[in-house]
Image 1 (cartoon, rainbow, N blue to C red):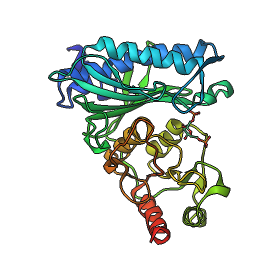
Image 2 (image 1 turned 90 degrees about the horizontal axis):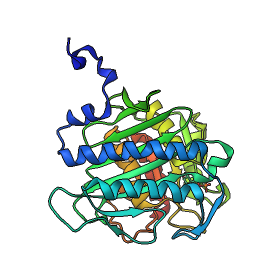
Image 3 (image 1 turned 135 degrees about the horizontal axis):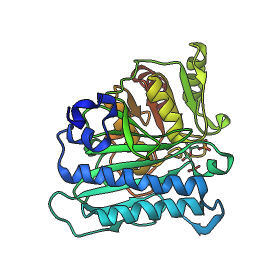
Image 4 (image 1 turned 180 degrees about the vertical axis):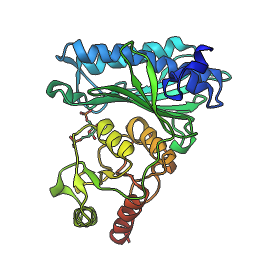
Length: 315
Ligand code: AFP
């Protein structure tokens, strides 16, 4: 019996699964390169220096050595992949051109280590990646051709979509990614809510939405890490995450290019929704690298309800 025939569907490794997705070889190569880079990021997280790197990123946040190291690992892989045109990283101030525009090239926006401030208290963190065809990174999120995240938790997992379902892989003892869940699907409404930001800075509409969730019995689950918090909602298929407009931060905190667009792509392809309170996240036209948007993301009905409360406030 051939090796493939002897393997159950759930022993499929990442490259084989990508080949079943009817996408071009360069995109398969790119996603596999990102998966390969994650092994070095994991090693850095597990053993790396937690000291502050002494530099700061676009947002003035002190860069932990791990932020800088993870960014360097991913960028180097993308540059040497041979299929990447432009690169934007949450840890870089400007777009990096890896090579001149050409056919079958991709552009990548990523947050190399989202939640890095949680490493020194041993909480889960992740890498978030958004992939576009061509060289324009300021396209609406709906034009992404792929999105994925890596979650560095008790297990290391990878969730990706190229627009044909959302699929989870777990890393085995040989550091290979093997399929663990295929075509993940979310319920219309759920029992978890993850409220980011300071409650005392919520607008009345957001406050009403949270009260609605609590009244219907939703349980608060919030770690401070976007990737683990969203992974819980996605894999349990039930719940909503919000980092809303705050009274002193009307655009919220999370970045459109590096966090919201890739996560919204995954959630929508799993049957959920993502909104800034007025329109789908994936339809927002990115204005700059530092573009932030309020976000309500998760089960379709929960997000619809949030928009309903907010539309009363926004008039
Ligand atoms: P860090 O990368 O600075 O730790 O921020 C993580 C994050 O961008 C996102 O992962 C969380 O959902 C959000 O910030 C948490 O923000 P608060 O600490 O304000 O709740």
